[in-house]
Image (cartoon, rainbow, N blue to C red):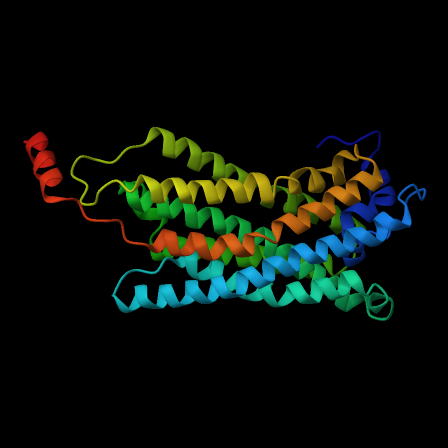
Length: 312
């Protein structure tokens, strides 16, 4: 890993502020800098961030209710429910109640003066759930596209044991990161920050894999369903937008902990915007879950006869 004119000891001493990423970072107090950020910006940024989170909360709650109802109907029709979809909705069910708590922390900075532990816990839980949800979001989209292509290579890893193992690994990683960050060890913060960076980067890799897979793969001739290109394109668009737009600023924000190449004020604004944008994943998740579980339309009789003739 590249360090900006510093050894590891210098990093631990000088960059504790960045690696901790505590709740007060979201409030943009800017007390660590030379005071170049004016008071108006200091007060406006938490309000803007809180507005984005409230919008995502108001939009996410009814959409999640609709998604749960749709999946209930899906289950009553004796159709398979994806493990990734179930775990993603569970992650959202944990993150949605934390959104108003994070808004309170942002707008009432004085609350953290008497109870820093509670504020830090809210922030660490929200950030961990956000990254965990991003990875599950990409897995739901990838499984949805694979299930429509009916490829043999998709069967082993989307089976119940494999998908359950992946989801439990995500949850275990989330709990370990939150627990270790609460210790407030500067040495641990460095390695935890690296884990968070690689954890977030994994979602971008999944998005690239989906883009390549969508462009190169095709249906076998004996596929029993018609090619639902629209559903695949929408799922791919939702997943790519979530990764590259909503979470696009998270990579430089997390990576700056090690590169230390961005001005402190710019870093704080960048990090704050990345949090606000990532909250809109709570709106995209239920749309993706319903679309991924939707059964593709059956082939028409004439189209099926034509395929049978080509197979002879």
